[in-house]
Image (cartoon, rainbow, N blue to C red; front, side, top):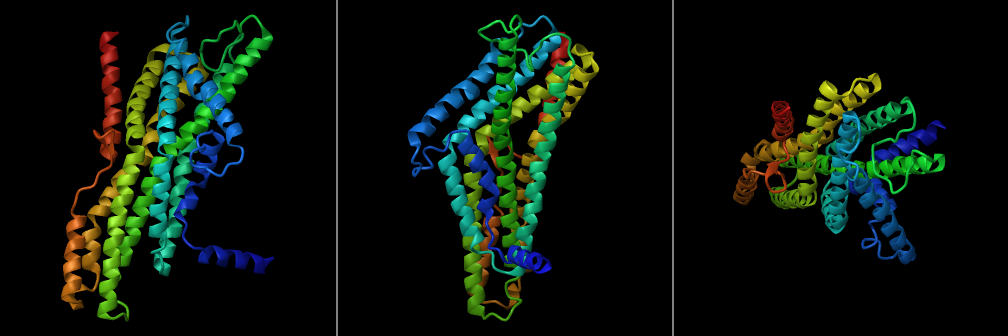
Length: 393
């Protein structure tokens, strides 16, 4: 038994780096959600999958936000109207982001091809050890979003379970009277529970891909820094050091290509998410202060209020992180043993340095930086919107 554990640990230690492996869950979920038809050309059940995709996305991705929107501000209680508005905005944004990602799947394949090129350059034990540390970072990203979704879902369900009389998970419109029929009541509830589960899965993919992609970019920039800073300290010849620096210059260019590809994928989904986050923080504040009074409703909106900023924080954090690491690449090249190298090496070193001085910031919608500054600006924007509502009130 002990020998098996040792062999398993050794296999894990010696495993080839595979950045694309971190996104296998995303591809599985995209396949379940019916949007990989154009990517999976070899699927022998294409017609069946196409029918499944059409039905699923019409019934949930389109109709779920629609059945919430048709009930906007039609409930007798203001608390129900607030709850309906918040979840409606979230679901509409989720469906739009999911639709954008469905059109970007070929670009995501290009993103993975770039990652494979970068993985092939990871050779030394130091680089491998750093790559393994990325697993913990990416695991933490997943845990952050689980900590967002689970409490919100649980408190939303609890607030409904302990209400008197029949009530839905969210105030919504149905083409039948669910209040007067037990069967129709359960049909409506099953649709809402199953539908929100599918939309949560869509939202999980929408929210986790940007921080994971940016985290991966940061990791590969750091690995390049390690690689560059170690040039000239081993027993390689001056010619071999020149060739290694040439390869590092190519790696740097590959990283810039990776950055632009990620920006292409996440730009508009993140712009939508910033707008939705500011709106929902404002709505949660208004609900907590003025419109809810029962303990479970207060708990729901309190958790909701805390969860909204956490949806964008990891992406903003890694958006700042990769920009900082790009800016620090010129320090790595000067940490190498450059004084003993050839003139050609020093010329390429200047090229590497000039490129590293270029400012790189991922933009959301071409207008807003994906950066920690934007995270704080979004929170301030939510408060400003709340202040405007207070004046109107």
